[in-house]
Length: 295
Length: 288
Image (tube, rainbow over all chains, first blue to last red; front, side, top):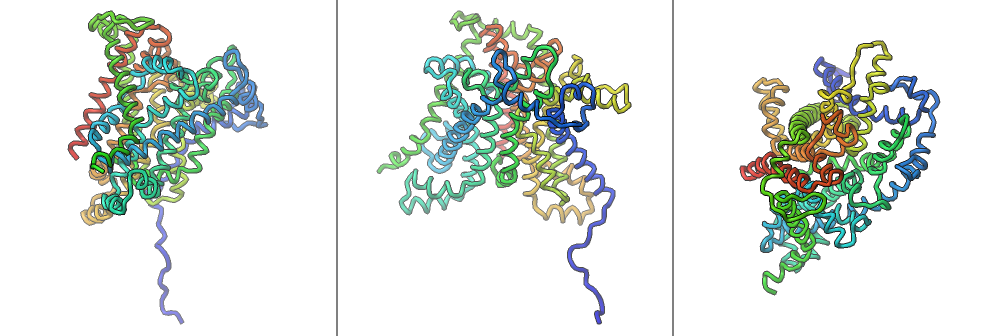
């Protein structure tokens, strides 16, 4: 016979009023962040008649992908009616190199600044810090001049170069802060073993850099994909990214605005960063917790 | 090898960056600064006019409105993002159910561009089809949500949209700070009988100050440079009620062909960032 029972597992938490208030706050906040996205999806699936007569928050009676097809293939930006499809390719062509170059160079810079304190390293670091603060507007005209002189204005290499240059300070800072927390002994040991600049980078630093690489790649990729200003000025007609096409589709309609097409086009341009975020957001949060953005 | 030669690869690796900093940043800064003292219009010239461009700039209605707007936007946007972000971070740190799902939802809009954000919120604020129409349709017929169509309120619509986009990032940074707090603090305050909410208001913010500072710096840089959101959502209107400095520079560059005004305005933006963001940040770093 059992004389007494020991409770097994954690004590069930009773729902106190404070706890209920907490969940109400969380639910309201979730609604604030989710509702605009829900409205976008719902609107993109409605025909215009239903948008005119129905309620904004109502789910479409007969969801249709017609607006999506138009947004993707035939919506007009000025005189050209090719929809968002050319922009998707362009955005990838800009955002992928626009991620790889600054991340690789930023890692190298951060490593060089943290462990190889060459003469003038502090000066370079200060200059990089300052340049993260300078508003882009200061550079636009001289940049247009320089890019034109170099024959790169309005070309794909040109816009990639611009993205790389202007995000380098940020990636350098991210990696420098990360490597600053790496114990100096690790570097000294590799030096004693005969490692040089490149071999220590490749075999010691790169393997331990995964958390910061993930943070940097996500920040860079969504940043390059979401950029509007550089794409509008420097990409040229052939390379317009999705953000630029999207604004021209939304602003260039005459007569009644096709809100369903606008919303579908908006979702199309948001799809890739959203997918990146859903696929890797968990590691992003972990990377930030590991100190990517300290100091 | 001499020590200096051994460090040569580091210098070589950094050459592209050094080149960029010196040539693009350095040259661009000096060029802009110099041009702001000339009478340049469509094309740059070297006709020195002293501070005439700055005098014209500060006499311009558009620029005055732009400065007031960016200050108002900045204070409300940064304050709103930090306050809501901190509240959300604290809420997520209470050992709640579905923590991952909530965090994912709160951070989702941070991956969207200001162009996307602007289009969505313009749609929600649309008086004939948006939230106003929907709520009236449900029976509250005097409900008003027409901020974008009125000069006095349009800037607040921009603030709301900005907070929607940027809060998640601030939240994640501050959450990282909360996760790093020593458990002893909680034990100590519990023994002293201090309620948790008072600890969160009076004790914790001071402990995670570096994270709050990082978030504040990132948000203030966004606020001072705000451009895409305004262009998409209001185009500076109604009237000139939502003009901002970055848009003033762009308009002067590409529509009004007035280089002198554009560079003078850009220089003032730079000064403002140095004084309002750079200086406090540098002092904070030194204090550490």
